[in-house]
Image (cartoon, rainbow, N blue to C red; front, top):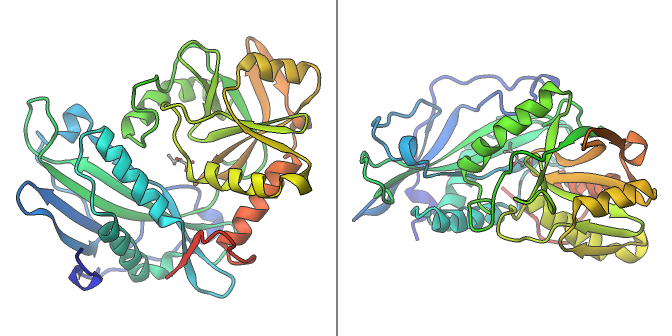
Length: 360
Ligand code: COI
């Protein structure tokens, strides 16, 4: 496997300033450098390099523009209380990129080399990791098919690149509850499709429903399965419900993305179940079950989990022409517990019992 020393570094002659954390929002600013790695048949993956952040130059016939072979990942680096920089579960994301690449018939970048590139890039751009507890550095590895060819078959050339964006909260609501439209017309993914991958195509498929929800005053949609029966995800996040003392999240069924924060939340919920007085279930859950619980007042809270927002409480569900307030419209105790535990580990305020943190 290529060593770190093989990553060429070309520094940017210009250096921008990190905006103050209250200005960041999500994904609006980019750092001074990027990491790139190319694949061609024959030499395989080659030319790992950290270079100044710049436009890409691609042939207009590049497969990515026509048949959508495109995948991305999302992970974060944090400035911990001791001033050191930590990556949160980076190999979870490089592994998931490899799995997604297999589904899209793409060449996956070697995980060790991609990890080495991410570490090197974050080191070079370390001044961009915000010091504030409300902010972090979002890391966006991306894999695209670059062969100029219009026949429909997997590309023989790829570009993997990583860009960095200092971010604050994903939703303008921060960790305050958001309003969610239960989507009964469009679906995000179907069994046998791409739903379990972080293919750009899944996000393209989600835009129309999200946009229509927004025009009605809702931040995002609750995605149901193809028969509008089972619950799948919320917006770009996995979803959890607390009904009585049982916490339920949809089981991974091939059309739901296996979220990193979903895994962390489940680990913490299982490990603290006795203290929290809860039972945890990964299983199918229907909209009918959630509505029955809402009507008999046993639906205590609902929230999404994702890298960008960490935990996002749901304060209202709009379903079949009626709006239902969840948990008095406030952040519930489980959502608070998970947000606090996960962010305390990320910012180095609590011991990392799970080896989630990799200090640079
Ligand atoms: C996440 O919640 O981490 C996401 O996947 C959101 C991202 C697409 C901006």
